Amino acid sequence: MQANPLPERLAVAGKYLNMLIEVWTDVVCPFCYVGKRELASALEDFAYADEVEVVFKSFELDQSAATEGEEVTEHLMRKYGLSPAQVAAQNEQLAARAAEAGLTFNWRQARSANTLDAHRLIKLAGTQGLAGQATDLLMKAFFTDGQVVSDRDVLVSIGAELGLDGDRVGQLLDGVDFAEEVHADQAEAGRYGITGVPFFLFEGQWAVSGAQPAELFLDALEQVWAETHQAQFITLAEGSGGSCGCGGCGCGS
Image 1 (tube, one colour):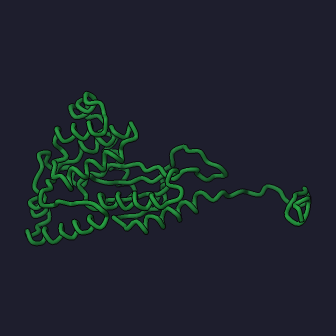
Image 2: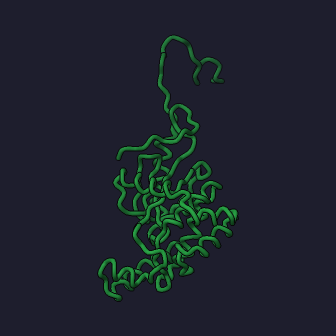
Image 3: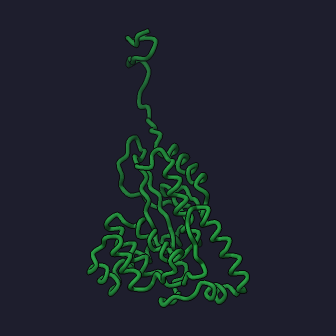
């Protein structure tokens, strides 16, 4: 996988002093809901969590989805040719997996919808450092509360809960602000060969795909941290220039 150039960040001896994780998600993806929670749980146990920056990237699973919302059962039956029993079995498994992560997936009341405006709202929230919170609220609205995340009133309400300026949210929904950024995220995913979400990219090089358990995310955090934050020095000269070490030159022995 070819890595993108990383953003400019403070580095010592070629090693970054913080860790960047880019996360491609869609707010109507159950595995994204679980995966985001599992990563958050892993960060709670990670010693350097304060030095981790998580950046959320947009990924629309169905760019042609209707904006008015469709019952999830009907949507899955139509899109994948599943029977009602197959949809129920699949969603019950997903609900059980969500419950293991401390989440509630009320799939019987969930309504599928176009997510472009939801992603644009996340981008707006991101200008105030609230992209993660916006993603959480939108996912809860869809999976737990059965709300249509393309509905203007729902998006305005979530914007208010985030503390965003109401006029600015209205302006966003009336126009096309951040649509280009959303599409750019999707295009970037395509260049990486990402076809499914969630997808977690650590420092532009190490990838974790899917809703993995917190233990695996913690292992990934520790491995990438060790790889990228252990300072490496290039020796330019050594030998007879003189130096002090234990056993000589006043080390107390």
